[in-house]
Image 1 (tube, rainbow, N blue to C red):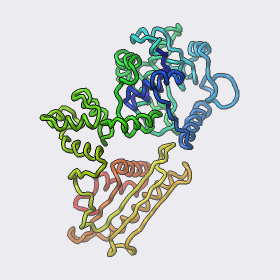
Image 2: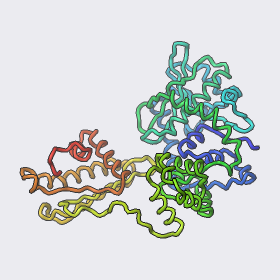
Image 3: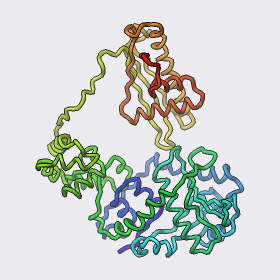
Image 4: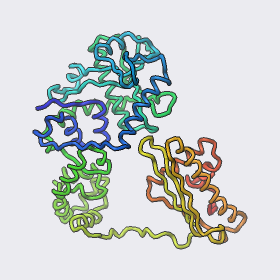
Length: 463
């Protein structure tokens, strides 16, 4: 059996995808995949992926070169900071000697035998390759020195995968310190994530994360790595499109008629159907749903409770390739609205900032000079995102202020109503986020809109 190439970043991505197949496939060295029936990975090399990589490296250089200059031990050499790495031997010397208030950039940690013994892992099956936390920071401690992991992330939001990655770094650092005889203690209570453009890292409490990780290492990882790849559970979800094995899984699902083709089926729902009813294919699901007591059995699964009839229609639609009505609510717009506004917003894929925003106001001929109005703003670059957001909020406020002025002083029955539309919940969240962001910058227009759209409008008001 080939040794596996495990790492904190790979384990973090496993927790993101929630897919044992992804972990098993990804951990096998490329040269050994064909022999195990593992398909070739299809890595995307797009302009966006290249920009994301470049942005991450630039952020590392920004932090160690400008945010904390002179406080970081860095491997010697010329060129960009991110190209410099301490060897394992050099890392032990630096970690043994650095003083409180300083850090080591890209120190190399070798997972020691004690780590494998602690979690009952066979290093011939579960092999971690050397890893390099972005920063290991030294803090004063009652027992001497405390070493804390800090990871640099070129994103403006914290993710679960970030917590998992720094947590596993902390466990490996703890074992490496003990194995190397270093006079220091690894911080198992806190870790840092240094988000894009932040002046200081965000310090996280990782005690609960370590409990989850240690359970996974001791009870699950070895079984996943020792199992035949074809035997591991998998399920197609929207986030699978980020996986290098997505195309092969999608092809397999279509060729086998997998139950994964059912829209909206969660990974938990998929596991429930597989473990509880032996459902793997659409044919299996059709058979199960036709059996007595199927609806009652679905009550035991939160995501499938009360959805027996919906599932029956979805199975029919997918198998026959036809449109099958679900008898849901009509998407028709209200008939009696006085003014309608459709809002759209879009994030840019590199930094996650809102880069495009717009609205279209329609109706209200007795209120406005024109029957409709559109406002659209698109940032040409990252530096224009703030201006687009501010311009959108101000333009929307100005447009709705006309309606508010029209209603002012009129009896409720004589006021004109407003309906605002977004495509989905994701866009609704983006809209509230852009209002909160602009309101945080002392934006009166954003604050006024937020009071209405966040449910804090005046009682009895139409706008």
